[in-house]
Length: 160
Image (cartoon, rainbow, N blue to C red; front, side, top):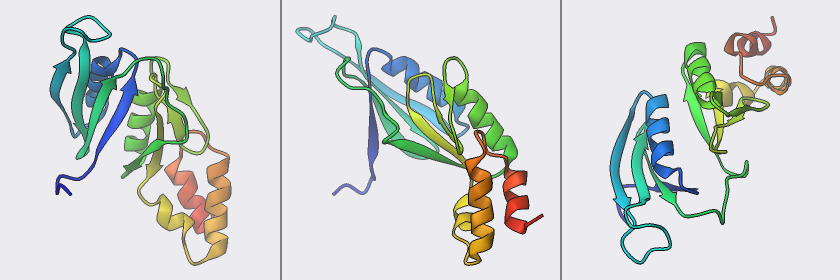
């Protein structure tokens, strides 16, 4: 097995290059890689983008123009651990802009239908706290939110 880790392939219907540019514009630690194109004899015109490679926060992706056969569902999502409320606000706003859809409990769909969870880095520790009452208060507060409010989650955790 390669030591380079995994690459996530995202299947698009003609929007692969646009999506790659979009995601690179949203994430601070991001870069666009190579673009490949269909050749002669493909089911689409020669020169049409086949794949667009990009990296977000160290995670490699390839956007593939595979056609209309498949679409994204909530069964797969990407978690974005955020250090503070400013990061939560940035990603939430950027990913729901231009056709994205906010969802419950920090989940959203971007304009391509890809699901994301925009969550504070501390959330797993808060929900898994050995003091089950603290964890339950955080869980209850979380269930009432769309975009997560870190200060409100911390107040729930502290019982204030």
